Length: 136
Image (cartoon, rainbow, N blue to C red; front, side):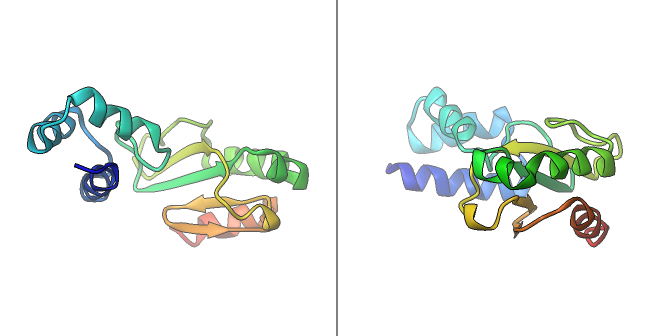
């Protein structure tokens, strides 16, 4: 099976369940006649996949240099304050997960955040609060 097919199947699982549980990795490995380690490797390689449960909304902050230089530190602090979370944490109510990520691919409009599947560029601290408020 081609790698793109494996990634497509992992994408389906991630969307359906919200993350990729170990049992799904093992089941998919059997279906595709692949070692579970290869499936798990793909599931953990791509930052948009998760092998742990996440909140209903996932906020990703681009930590790469262009976003940092464009004012990313203030945006990072605004996300922390607004959500009351540190990167890697999920809120106790299961509503939010906050993650750091590498380049989202729109460096020309940094700082950039991604909330669920929506990408926001030219973000400043005030805009962080507005973006997250609109997800409520």
